[in-house]
Amino acid sequence: MSLNWVDDPYSDFLDLPAGERPPQFYQLLELEIFCAHRERIEQAARKQFRKVKPYQEHPDRKMREAIQDVITQIARARVVLTDPEKKEDYDCALAQRLGIDRAGVLASRMATPVPEFALTITAGPTDVGNTIELLADTRVTVGRDPHCVILLHSLRLAKLHGELRHQHGRWSYTHVARDGLTLINEQRVVEKELEAGDRIEAGGYVLRFRRLTDLGKEPGSYQPPITLIVIRGPSLPDASCSAVGGERFLIGSCETALWQLAGPWVSRHHCRMEFEAKRWVVTDLRSTHGTMLNGKRVARSPVQDRDTLSIGRFEVMARLHS
Image (cartoon, rainbow, N blue to C red; front, side, top):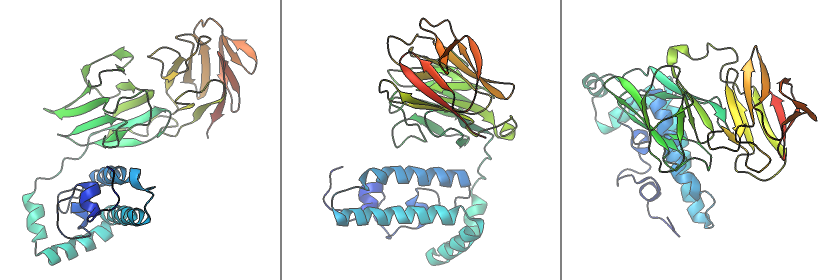
């Protein structure tokens, strides 16, 4: 969009129909009125934020002010609708203002199914530890396009990389991008019906498909206890990789490596990081030029905070988090 000015920023930026301005919160977030599901409200707010974020730095001051007004309203909607007391007061006032029988609307609406499954980002360059609840009978898109439900920040991903669908009581994953690949449980797939515990790898990220009742039961769950950061070496799109306790990931130059380090001195399958017995361990995978830990070539060794790994021409610092 290339605009010098807008008459209605809610229409121009959010594609909302003409009507009350600013819109009531449910219309603003494109939700059914009186929606009561917190995760749906959070997802809707994130989606609307993504639509307007690219225009925050517009050179025209009036344009920036108009965009900021929209952003402020989205933020207000999120705060009010995710706070039970504020939401109750807002809903009652809205129903009275619009002349709507709120109790009747809620009684006639089928109850929203309680989410049973979620995806947690357990390794990757960003957002490690984030959990996204999966709502039944929905389509969940994954990619780097701002409109994707699960937005992942890596150039290794297609704008629309894959999607999850819920049909007939089961979740399935489909790889929809022309390029790239998706691994599930370390096997390349185009489409697969998911089981609890499945491990999805796409574009340098790991997403774990789990039952909500199982979340948080693993030691060190969902806090990124390790981050690897390139401190010296050739430039690359993703200069860091984080992972939660219990994870493992391949480092190398091949397409299936979770952390892809390109260059002639890096083997396709160079080394592996894995969490064992409450510590991180690096294992060299018979790489041509070896894996160095603090200047010494190792076959397998524990990794401590601030240790330095040399992988080809990349010097990498390990940061462990408590």
